[in-house]
Image 1 (cartoon, rainbow, N blue to C red):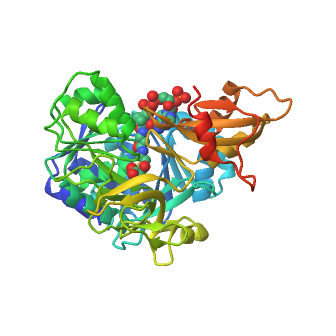
Image 2: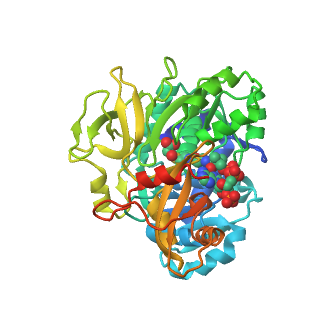
Length: 503
Ligand code: MLC
């Protein structure tokens, strides 16, 4: 299991640095284990049982990592939440998950306490002072105590919310076995080793930063140097210091690093591995990176429900525009999404995935879970792609109505539902327009209600109160009507064509 390898490193190399935040002390593997043990003990003392949801809405910090590992250790379900969620979203996630405990920043206490009466399952609230040292917080007796690690691979380790095209956000249940399968595949494919040093710049409430990067390094017994948030100038300076061997980012981060270079060349070819994921890597950035940094980015493909599926190789051709081949233990196929029948190489169809890394289902959503899989157990990813005759896969858009901005998924219906609550909005359609830096930008087209005074700034402010900042439309365009098909369904492709070029 993924925790067993970590426990082994804590025993065998207690003095090696596991993680250091730029603004904090180095934490050794021994200290990591002791504090996780203490936090696990605290959770049990607070009455948390295996299977209970432990929600954590904290910025990227050591406390988050301790709580994650502690919850997993006692068999509870870790529920990481984006610290940027406003109260309306937070309330939904806590209510839907029936979280029993929430750890949040002290400064959010008044807002959170105001929503607690609506959350009967939430029995404990713990407000965290970010300046407090968690290594000192746990007492030495509890840090020596250790819980037996979960042994059932089907036991849920964490729950990650993903939105849907037709539903409110749903919690994808990721088991210990899923995490183990994923991390083993990545180790084999990417050659993780003990002497790796990862520069960690990603948020840790998603699969990319949490599983691929953090688990990847800890599973290997490697060291992590973490920035609480990505900042291009600092990241480039650190990369140039030659202390690191591994770096992972989303295309927007790579774009900013490339822009930060400002036309100068920096030789980063000493880096053992630099990966890109969570959105398509634009071709010009792939080549720009080669020219500026002397690095060929390794692009891979994954999703919340599976972790990583496909990857370009560590050794061998990293093909521009391609996401590579199935990782060890992963099966992939391209099918006609209407019939689930296999398509020949070169034809575009839905990418479907099978393997021990594929999630076990959506929390309390048996119908949505059933709909996510084919009759013979393949996961319908909703991503379109093709397989080349030599086994490389290339993604070709999405079957689902989804926008990816800066590596974050935004499901238009979620934004549309909020817009429709606004009194000046008669009808709306949310689309993604291509953007050089962000991949796509969220754009809202609105038919105003007759006689209502609609205003872009006011509508954005309305959304900001109800949605995380990355879901808020960057542009609002008022239109008289939408292009619609014979059934009256808005034709978003046509809308994109006509609106995305407008400045
Ligand atoms: C921040 N903003 C975004 C945004 N991130 N808007 C759209 N899309 C995003 N992704 C908002 C900010 O709130 C702010 O809004 C404005 O944009 C400008 O902020 P910024 O300071 O320039 O942005 P920054 O905070 O630097 O964030 C950019 C970023 C961040 C790229 C560093 O988005 C990021 O960390 N992305 C990585 C996401 C990630 O880890 N995805 C993995 C998902 S897992 P305002 O209004 O306040 O000005 C997954 C599976 C897989 O997909 O395969 O990996």
